Picture (cartoon, rainbow, N blue to C red):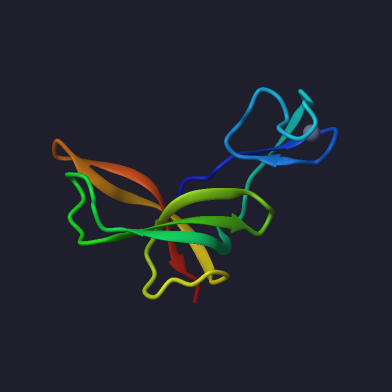
Amino acid sequence: MKTITAYKCKSCGHVMFPHHYRCLNCNGLEFKEIKPTTKGRLLTFTIVDQLPWGIDERARVLGVVEFDNGVKALGVIKAANPRIGMRLRAGWKPVRVIAGEKVYGLTFRKTK
Ligand SMILES: [Zn+2]
């Protein structure tokens, strides 16, 4: 499991992922690194059925997940019948093959 480092502004507490030079909320310049949990909930999703070469699937679900500590990230949703608000767990798995090489990305599965 790849860990994702997010950044919390030392002046206002705003959490950002990925890193930005200045806080998007207050323009602060100092941050504290925080590691998100691997669990969160699905905020929104879309189903893509026109997929590029290298993805051997008929359709793919892309979604934005909010981790339990407030960090948000986009990834491939590997759950049947996705619905907003469902609990998911993050993984780091191959999401595409390019020139015979696996490309890894964020994936989300339903928590048990
Ligand atoms: Zn700030």
